[in-house]
Length: 202
Image (cartoon, rainbow, N blue to C red; front, side, top):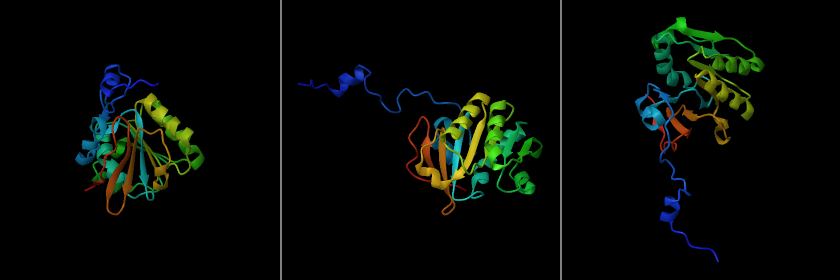
């Protein structure tokens, strides 16, 4: 015959985890978007971690989302690296967004070499942020990027297909960017429940 145990007794014995209680919030860097910062733990991008941006297609909003952060970092003379971007960066647009191009590095690499290049840049400790657009990457590859970002204390951004939204990921943060209406959805946020509603982007 099983004993009936009250919830209060279980809580007092610390045998039940109370979600959201006594969780240390990891350091974060502001995204430059007030609505997004308001729903992310620490108020921004998780530091020393990988964030995934899931897109309908490359070039469908990831730069507009990231430019405030990249501008802030490069103005502080921090190196930002783009690994095998799907399009040639249009310098006037980056300048207009406030990015100091002297601190922007472009790495051209084949699809096979891009993951290795992104991992090395993240791990080096000399890059404040690294962006990559891996077309084919498995869980092991994502874990390597996450570990490299933690080792190098860098912001890692992997821009991937929105079709990957239903697949698990070791990334600390996962955002889905919708082109129409232009909005962002928080799918996963380490240390907090995802935001219930999509956030409009200006």
